[in-house]
Structures are given as structure tokens and as C-alpha cells.
Image (cartoon, rainbow, N blue to C red; front, top):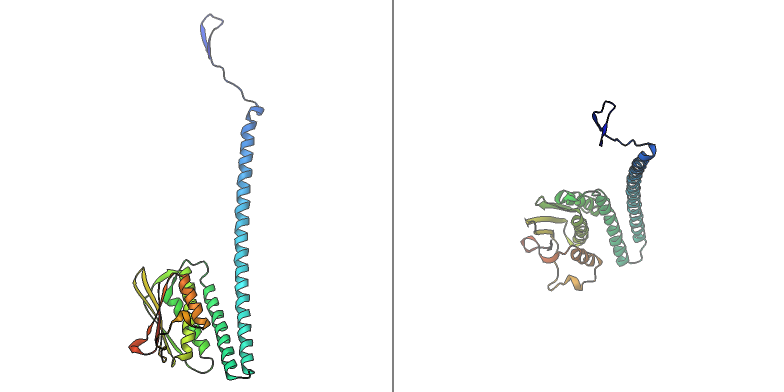
Length: 250
């Protein structure tokens, strides 16, 4: 801006305004184009990420389905093999193995229903699981009553899964010795003090029994899972001093 004199001799105020041509606007156009391209790449990345997640979920579901089916086939083959075993001991061992595999298949099916859940209503979960176990254990005509009682609590799914396997092993083991009645009990004194017990009405364990020194596969599985969740296993007499109580503090 500067002062100049007009034709009549009067001073004039002149403002110089720069005129931008297309070449001057080109950097802004380039920036806008780059921004649009970046947004398009981000949309493509998010779409591909979603599609990948969906494919992974589908593959996991298919894998779980094939796993359960495979375990059921194995259980059936073990059961058939037990019928042609040459000794009663071999028959018993094959039937035990068949039941273990079949019960694990049912546990896997229940666990699949917990996909994408961070927490689970533990009592409801155990009731459904024990209904499956009761049906499985009663296939030979012996009626096993499995009662789930106690507190309604919510626990993380990551904690419920190993606890479900623990219940599976303890209930299956109790069914071999109990007279037909097994109780699964949940107690919750506080968030940091919860107990899960499996109680049977069998003959009880011998004095001085130490699960860490046992040879049974089921107890080794239980001890490993208890250690996995940072819990503690206690073995006590059952209700009214009869049978056995396995309690997991977690």
C-alpha cells in the first residue's frame, strides 16, 4: 500500500492485492489430493482388517467344530474297543478314557459358547456343564445326580474356562466312587475369596492321601489347572464327614 497523486493533484491511497494464478494454488490441490488418498487407504485398511477378523472367527469356529467331532469319534472308538478287551482291567481303562474324551468334547462345546464374552455367570455356566456331564455319566444306566448350588457370581471368562475343566475332572472322578450323588458348590465371601467345591458321597480317601504323589491322570490335570489360575486345592471330608470334598480357593 502506498500514496500516489491523482490527475487532479489529490493524493490517492493505493492497495496492492496479489493475484494468485493456478500455479500458486497447486500446492493446496496436491495437499488435498494426498489427504483424500490417505483417507482412502485408511478405509481400505479398516475394511481389510474387519474381513480378516471375520475370516479368523470363521476358521476358529470351524476348527472347534472339527475338534469336537474328532473327540467324539475317538470316544466312540475307545468305547467299541473296550467291548473286545481281553481283561476286565483293560475294559475299565478304555471306558475311563472314552468318558474322559467325551466329557472334554462337551466342555469344549460349552466353552465355545463363551466366545467374545469377557465375564460369565459362573453358576449358570456350571449348571449347563453339569447337565451335560450327568447325561454322559448316566449312559450306562447308572443315575448320577449332580447338584449345583451356592452363590451367583460373575467371574472373568479366562478364569471360568480352567475352572470348568477342573469341575469336569473332579465330577468324572467322583462318579467312579460316589453312590450317585455329587454336589458342586460355589461360595463367595468376597471378590478376593471364592471357593469352588466338588463333594461326593463315596467312601472317602485313605488317610494321608497326597494328590501330588498320586499316579492318576485326572488329579495331575486338576493340580496343573489350579496352579494355572494361581489357586489352592484343599481335600477334606465331605458333608457330615462322609465322602470327599475337593475345594479350590481362587
